[in-house]
Image (tube, rainbow, N blue to C red):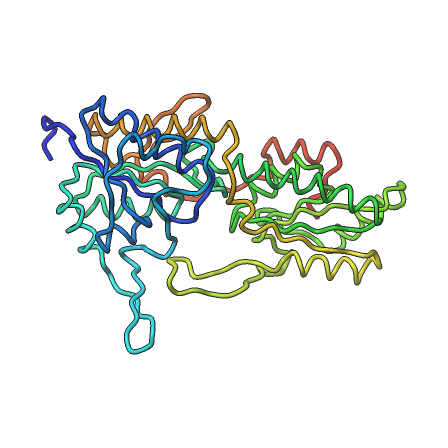
Length: 365
């Protein structure tokens, strides 16, 4: 479309894994739409709906009362990459390129722009679709908080709240039974959930992918606590954590995903090794999808609303190929291609790492 033409119709989809705050963004886009003279098309089940042509109109009544609701009213999928589309042929899964189908539906729906809400994978797809001629705007969502171009992604604060509350509850049962309790949390290759959740929940040991740990240091921390009269310990371990000279624990693979690696199982391994090498009774809890579900925190509700309203304003101003980003306390925008240049990982000099060490938390170094 030309710079002088008015944006009249926009699409919106939620890609990748669900998280609290998605509905708040959808609401933040849809409610102001009439003020801009735009109509909004909600695409069903993320990029799957874009490829398969499934969508519905969104009006104010459709987004009324969804601010605090978890999940997404549009549905989502982390297996719908148009450039990595799984197709069943003769009983086997074959990966094909369905990007042309996505482009045809975009054109058939007469969309002037498409707002895609998602994490790193979604932003990579946005960048490729933009190269095909679609006017893309990205909204960063992931509980993992691993997008470099924004200070925070919505969904992360809500996940950290769940982790902290879980550690609070495990603290009482661990101390009552004098046990070591290991809790495995999500995050894939980034340790932000384990770091921030462990710090907020008072974990004694935090294990993250960015700081490979020593088994002996983990055992020493538990035994030293016992010498201090503390007969229990809480270990918060990220699913991507790995020992020095070791590898991440892989639960399985799924070729339908762009990244087929499925992490999981490090919690069981850590618990087993601790019990074998310290003699202390050890239990493990895997939070799993509890971290994705439920209502967003007030922080995430506000951030999501600001992201959504800013995204539709970008569309009105023809600011395509951009991603909404939080910088300090301001909402700004960055190029999508810059946002996906590399992952945001925990650095050893991060202030939260320094604070954790200052209060006695071990990273197994």
